[in-house]
Length: 59
Image 1 (tube, rainbow, N blue to C red):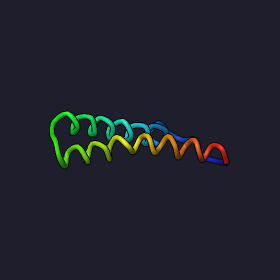
Image 2: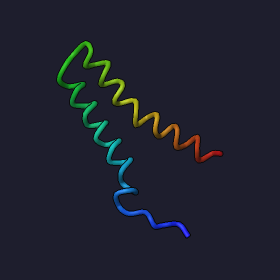
Image 3: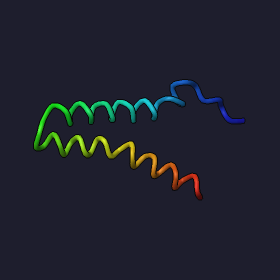
């Protein structure tokens, strides 16, 4: 039998994606140059995660 997932296991990845998104938005609003690149990187992570989840669900 599989052990039931606790709340920590269920919400770990969504919480991490939310924190990365918030950090990316704050960085995008507070600077230029290298901070713009960091913001693009941080904001692309949730988009890539959704793409990965959609692709994994198809197979």
